[in-house]
Length: 134
Image (cartoon, rainbow, N blue to C red; front, side):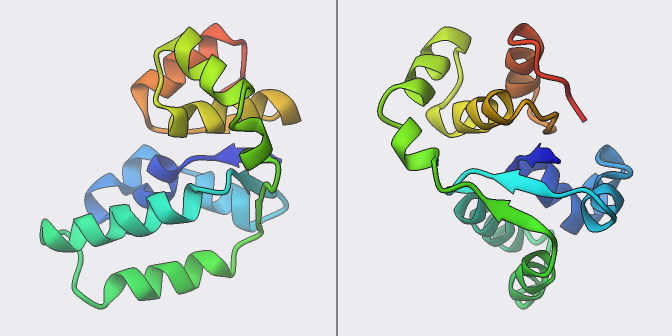
């Protein structure tokens, strides 16, 4: 099991970023299960739409990519919202993260699972919190 953030997910679908997450898609599709906070899908969908605006993806590609991602063994954590009242904002403050990124860190800490991210600030916070990185 691993916690998957949107930056790592988006790397699968953008040709110029696929080298940043080698083996991650294989790990998720093989025996691994990825767990994500509730806002993950919206972050991924937004990133794909932004890629269209920046002409990095064709107009129809976000829907195709999302359909592929939907088939992967990804579990959406339903506790994210309840943790958003205290634990997640506290982690954001402690580590200088956005609340969105702190949700990934909180989930990895709670599940004692490695975190798959390409975000430098989130990686730094994970190391500080002794959360292993994928």
